[in-house]
Image (cartoon, rainbow, N blue to C red):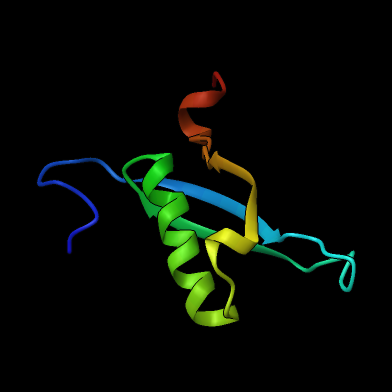
Amino acid sequence: MPTRAKGEVLHEYIVIGRKLPTEKEPVTPIYKMQTFASNSVIAKSRFWYFISMLHRLKKANGEILECKESVLLNLRTSFPV
């Protein structure tokens, strides 16, 4: 199943999430993933896909803390010469 349409531009996203705290485990580890996707919805979906395989954590038992697009500065065009 492709994650983007033909001709669609990919953006870099940084997604941060964790397992929901419980009484047994009030402090849970935070997971950060850098991914390329066409929008933030697909980036979050890919985050849950990989976290479920790597750390056995389902979307129902976790939460997204932050999902932001990583913007890189082009130093040649950002500053006047």
